[in-house]
Length: 414
Image (cartoon, rainbow, N blue to C red; front, side, top):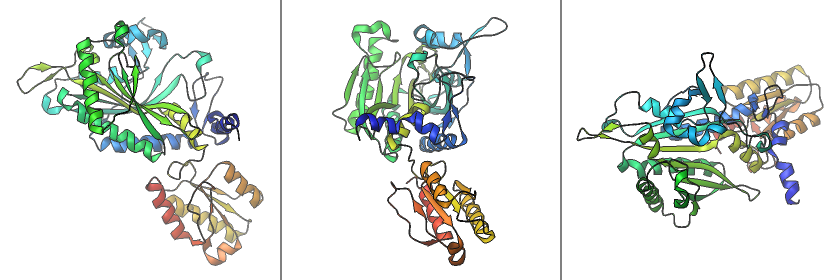
């Protein structure tokens, strides 16, 4: 199969529609995806995994509104740089607001809501929340580039001496996440370009310090061959950008860890040190998936819609061979037991032929399908059909044993 055929076969827009994951509506607007129950399951499972790992490092969930007065972005520096990329909102009283395109200034205001002591630091916030950017129509590309997108965002407020360890903690989360999803990662060290210094906030001295701290983290990890992204830094600081290679040999910038001395200065964030002096905290930004929409566009194409068991929106389909009362009764009992085990299961007891029922399950790329007929009723045994890409081909097995193993495999994120 040639490269173009591979791309067409794996196109996330086609698969998203075929697998009933997301839709677009002309009435809602271009670039504003609507997620179905099946697609929402995948989003929720991915986000739960990221947050479980973050919570292991002491992150706490916060919640912020989706709009802000422009004053916040003027103070943070975002208004000058990004005001043409924002959706602007006018209140009835004439106040100017913007739909938030990022979360860091809001999170900084939670930090700034009361005095902070060095004893409290590091303070770690996390939030999965939607953002909005006024992308031009010609730039939209399914869920890879949309006007509404969801960030699995996190911000750390810490002392300078804590930077390296906090970066390494976040780095661990990134590596574990992408290893689980079978992506090969490489690293790009995105720095400020001194030749265009007007494009960045903060002094050259602060930038040198920030880049040196990220270099220390790379040294601790033993990284020697990272790419250099001169001029690719965020306007407020340098960053470590993680690049994933997919099954079609394409590279995508995915996770990012960003070091920020500028926003704490602009937003006047402080803490009191052990000498009772006011100091500026350092802010570390990290998104593991970045935009969940964009990541899922990449991932759908990476696996061609064949999600692993733990992510599959439908993990098991139970199909009846006929409408015999005992067959239907057993099928419903299997479904009930599967749901009690926490599995996502659907029953197909339609009047279609068993061949069509199996083909429908294959089209929806369901990992496991069991057909129940008179033989299964008499024996109490199942002969599961396993999706072609899965290695554990199941033999004939009892209902309880099959469902227990399936549940264990799903929980272990195999």
